[in-house]
Length: 221
Length: 221
DNA sequence: AGACAATTCAAACAATTGTTTCCAACCCGG
DNA sequence: CCGGGTTGGAAACAATTGTTTGAATTGTCT
Image (cartoon, rainbow over all chains, first blue to last red; front, side):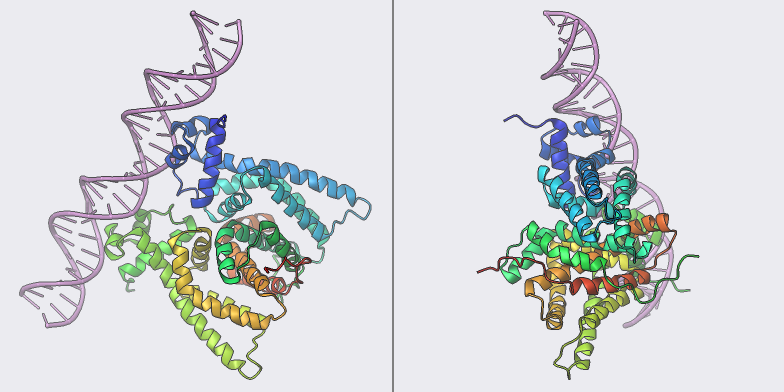
């Protein structure tokens, strides 16, 4: 069988190791030795470790943004007659479907989620800036549609709630192995990813539609 | 003013830097120089960097489990007359209060959350086992009380929902810096941790009380 | 085949890391 | 006042890190 191209081998190995151990804890030597390529290959093809990290993200996020934009186009076309207001459930459903589609052709959903989680928690400033600049537009488009679907929510409240549910999804799917261990140990029940998504849906919808907090924060003047 | 003990100065500084930059990205030299202690002091008092991290961990976890057990004792005593059923809101409220109390006397809540997140994400790490042994009993006690408060939920469903909301809290609070950056940039609004907790409460409660998923998973025979 | 660019390779680089050592100073209870 | 536990200081250690270099190799085109 023909081995994949060097660049691909590096990316394939890097994303797995990054997901397992984080960025700083994964050395280039570990990546290159496991990928069976020369150490210098990373700097030759990507320039630096930082660029490699961004390339790993791009391989997930580029097809994601493409598909997500297309899915939102279709969704908007369907609802052009009723004031362009798309129900919250449909928006969330579309996002979930797109998120599931992308890793289907790549490695695994878990890696994707782990990487997203690392992008937030790990203090790699350059990564956050890169993601926000490169992919902020899709997220802004999505939040705008969510805004029309939830007019009763103040902007800041909606922002935080979206990240709350983002946290739920990323945390659950990225730590899936650990959670599955505990769940099977306690309930002798095997859970699939699709099973988890089914459980997540009503929880996420209810979270977004929760009553407003009792004492609204003093609004910025 | 009397300066704190060297061990304390190291721990205080380490937990702040760990929270800001992560563990691997924080060098002992950075810690010791900022703490104004000698570089060798860390290895003298703690033995290694690994032990230092665990010491930082213990300084949160030990008082937390202690206080949480005590808080649950009190809560159970208060509700001994009405079938020992404690409303879900009170349970969540008590947990939130305890989680907030511990870092109140320490430095930052963020370190606590980051450490918890790490415990889950590192699927086969020794850290998760350590936490599960040390911290598992109090969590099992808590889930049992939640079980009585939500008798309509199947056991597995409740398990997953608890971890869903756990994911929200850990993700939000451990990635607080990143989220705060984005929020301030978009809404010119500074959010405090207490502000976030206030926003979290109704969302978490609604998430736990969401309707059951449409198609119940095929039950294990 | 010859020529030229792209790629691979081993080796070394410079910087940083955790850790250890040795020694002088300090503090405090005996 | 002595002496063991602690602190501070500087240096060096061995190991690992990302990155660079220059030669060897491969591939591709005329």
